[in-house]
Image 1 (cartoon, rainbow, N blue to C red):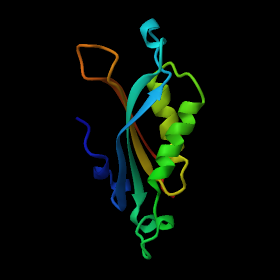
Image 2: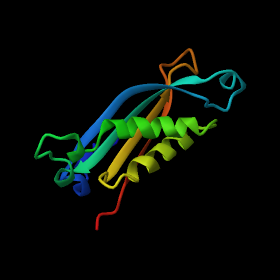
Image 3: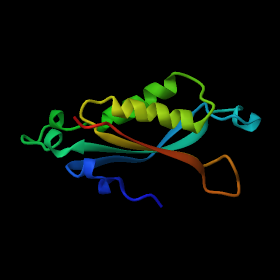
Length: 133
């Protein structure tokens, strides 16, 4: 098991925001049986945001990274059309998360729970961190 990302010294001054089990229907897959209809995909995303950029002083939403940003970016990527590989989806979502100016690092996990009857899910995880200045 990979050590927790917060063990990375570059993230010591960050808080972790997360979205868990976000279920979406995605036109994804390479096998013929996967191309018949959209599949359920479960998405988990962790965002690492410096405390200096995410500690609300006035208890206002504009002082933090809004979870709606994450959900919007997922929906926008899925709306672009067919995806063959989970790796492509995860990489694209990671790039979108890291494009947010307040996000220093992110972890994206995707899982397809309905592909094989003999396992809970098949999935992929990708992590990225911006170089600090």
